Image (cartoon, rainbow, N blue to C red; front, side):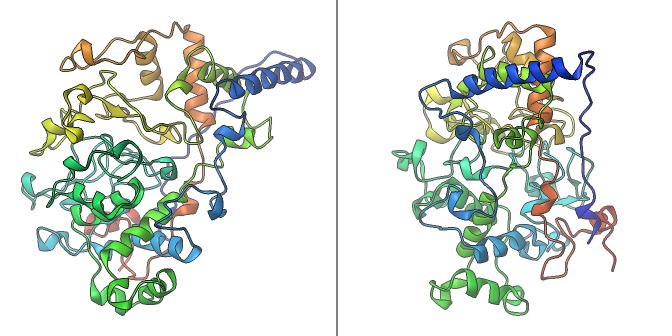
Length: 446
């Protein structure tokens, strides 16, 4: 097993000081458990703990899925390999970029990244910083994103994808067909899939990847495509569309179901500390975070303007579409009332990343909570008329901010996401990156 599987940012949960006797602690936790059970069940759309429970990754029938791309073990197994396969990177702008990156270059298990660089990047990068620019690539040839790289964790609960929700033919995007312009990645919506599938297919093209005939027919991939897509005629079976559907199937199984909060929901009352339970009570009660962050992934398909900063500043490479992307949902719908509104993100495993918000302008979970608590817009480009009504002071005390931070940062942290990473890929190439610097960073020999 290569070092990619061992290079990880495993956070250590600090034990909170407690002067109570064991008997008193049990009574306090029991009361907290009762209060939390009530909080979890409040609201017309909730059914207690089950409303927030993530399924087991192996229980494919319980995972939300696109009816046009039903999950199967064979499809998920294929997608797991393709997601990490650097051999798909065959349309690089320059020879130096060929077969050097994968989907996992920007969406890997170790940490969130502020700005992803696929083609034109070098090195694995330290946690949160990501790859650096290959000096052989002009800036305008880099495959970069104008917003902070979104997580693929808990993707099964994303009906539409990206910060502006442009990918996906259903849900919030019903009726947006006028924006699905031919010749653009958004035209992939015409295939009729939900966001996860649409983004996976479009993403392969956008990020200069494709199914190479030599890769498919000279390795075990052909057999895996045959098993996963036996219902697709052979001439179409090995194409990019099927590769994207397999990747999407795999992404839907990436669930943070081993986090303390998930264990608590399954009945393990000692999985969360008293401090974290107090934070959970705030999340589902006084702070009302659940108003936007709901369901098993603690996200939603709603879009809000809350005035966070854009992806700008030192170390950020700018592209031609940056200013448009900073309009948020409005950059897709073309409606001024949607300007500066961004999709509500999922909240699991946030502490792996030192960058938060669509622009990565916050450096800790606590900073984000303090921002929400104070409710003072940071981005001067966002008109006050666009700011969400939900951006109001939470009136949390310093202690309550700490409790809420502990819940979000630690109780929502799954410590073993590396269980979703393969030990090797059929091409035998290094992954998630295969450039020389990455091979050194990750300890791949040869």
